Length: 399
Image 1: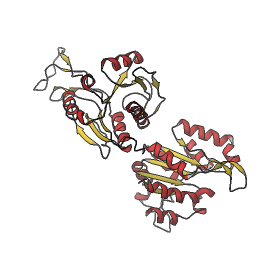
Image 2: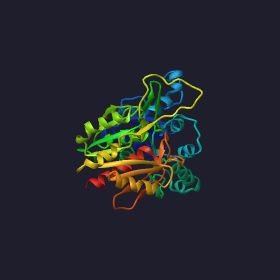
Image 3: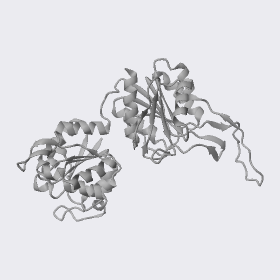
Image 4: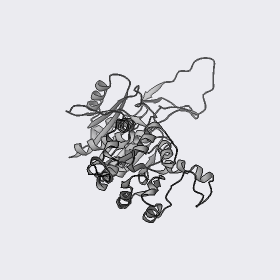
């Protein structure tokens, strides 16, 4: 996995060298980005020697190295697209202010705006700067946007004062990085079968019935399961998503194809997570030729598709079975009924009419429904974070 480590201009910049080594020990590929002020405290050569990579110090290259060109002009976009996490340690009050207010005047601040990857910041500064209302307001803004803030430690500071502001311990930062990336290895020995995406039911050779599912939730679950050490089987309907590296990918199209693929592999799984948005109905008879347009109306006769979740629930034995419920009304009532009727151990339900919880969004707002337990509502968070919370609950249920 790839991390961009932003190093900004504070006395604690020298500690970033130790942090690079620890991140590498976690099998993480580290690309260092330094601000101009950071170079006043430690040289880029230090990080280049540690990582074996060019350290990015300028937005458009430097006159000493090479003149600006198209490649250097869009390098921030290339880095933004290939990283799994942007970590800034130490993060000065200045960079926090830039991030909070969308100022992009150097490579690091531009990278922050350009990346879709999770962002974590480890502030380090004078105690008075840390406690200043402007700094705290900027931090509140970043937290509200989902940035992971690794609070500084208290103690003796380089300025001679004592209080909060010292860069968090290296192990604390590494631990948070593992949490954000889902690198916990606590699912080793488990085989998790996950379904994702929509299914398509043919009407004729050019038309089909489907739904608005993008597959993002199922693919996030597969990514999270892989990072936590599980053997992961991903049975997926048609999507535009990249398959998580290491997943055993089984592409399908129709509900019947998904049913066959799941049944063939279900016996290998200790956990089955049915995140796919399976079509509930299909044409009773698909036309062999394209249906021609006519002035009169067209009536389609539909029949129910196989209920894969219910079939699994009837014979799951010691397997853990998780289902999903996308609702538009009476979410709790419908989810509880589904939990009972399908024989599932957990239902993950969401109200798709909520902003940030519908189809094709990068975030979700879900509630976990368990047998003989209170429901667990989760706030809006990225689908990868939701995936990890679901897997956390799976671990608890497996005990």
